[in-house]
Image (cartoon, rainbow, N blue to C red; front, side, top):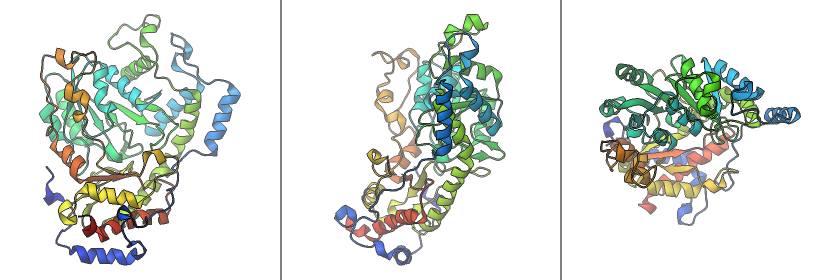
Length: 461
C-alpha cells in the first residue's frame, strides 16, 4: 500500500486558499464543468506530435532512387545482414549510444523476443518482469516456454523495486527484464548488483526512455541487452521498428541470427550452438531505416523540449495540493514519455477516477490520434498478471502450457503486487500533453483543466 508519509506536499496547507491563488491565474476557466454541461476549457484539438520532416522525405526519395527496399536474404550470404540503410543505422546507433553492437528489428516486441532467446533461456526458466508496463515485456519469456514472475514496483518511481525482485529469485531464475517506465530509469546500481550476485542477465526495455542517462551512461546500455522502440508514438519513430544494443559479441551474433531465419544458416555459417536458433523474420525495410537514421539525430532536441514543457507544467501543477509530481532517481535523467502524477483522494475529497473523468471532459484529443480519445488516464495499464492469460495460465494449447508442465505453482492473484495495484486502481494519473509542439497556451489549458475541476469538486463529490 502507499505510504502517505512519503507524499511530497504538506497537506496542512489550506486547500481553499491554494485554489483561490490558482483561480486568480486561470479565472477564465471557472465556469460550469463540461462533465455537467458547461463549456470545455479546450475547444480545439491539441497539435499533432510528429518529429517527421523534410529530412526524412529526402531520405525516402533516395531509397526510391536506389530501388532497394529490402536486401535481407534468409540464407548465408553477404545480404543476410540486410541492405545499406540497415548497416548504416546500426553503425550510427552504436556510435551515438556508445556501444559495440546495434541490431535493427521490426519492433521493440520483436527485440524482446530476440533478447530472451539470445541469453539462452530454457523451458521453465523463470524471468522476473514488471507488472506495470506494456504486455510484451511480460509475454516475451513465454515465447521460449519460460515463466514470467512478477515483482512489484517502487512507489515513487514506478520501475521494479529491487527488494521485491530479490524475494522472487529462485534456483530457476534466468534473467530480469527491467523497464524504464514513463521515461524514468530503473534502479541500475542496486538491480545490477543483485543480478551479478545471482548470475542473472538483465534485459533493459528502454522503449519509453531513449536518451535518458544514469550517471555517464545512456539507457539501453546499463544491462546486458538494451531495447529501443521506434513505434509511432515514441520519442522518435519510423512508424514501426526496434533496436537492440549490447557490448557482448556473442549475444549480438545470436540476436542477428534470431532476427533472420537462424535455422536456415547454421550449417553454412559454421555455427554449432543450436540453443534457441529457431529463427524468425524480424527484419526492417530500407524505408523504415532511412527514416530512423534521420530521427536519431533529432532525439536530443526532442527530449529537451519535453523537459522544458514538464518544467513549466510542474511549476504550475505543484501548487495543487492533491497532486504529487514524479520523482527523478538520484544520478539519473528523466525523458518523460508520459507525465505520471500521484493523486491524493483524501485531500481532494473525491476518487481519482471521478477526477480524471471530469478532466477528460474539459480537454480535446490530439490531431491524428482522435481514436485514442483524451490522453489523460486513470493509471496506466491494469497490472499484467490480472490479464486472462495469467489468471487462467493458458498460453500454448488448451492444457495450460508452459505452466502446467513446469512442476511448480505460480500465483498471479489479486494482491500479488500491491503497490502497482494501488497506483493503478487508486492513485496514479498519466497524461501525454507535454510532447514537443505544445505551446505555452496549450500547456496553460492543461493546467486550467486541473484547476477548473478542483474549483467545482463539490459538484461531483
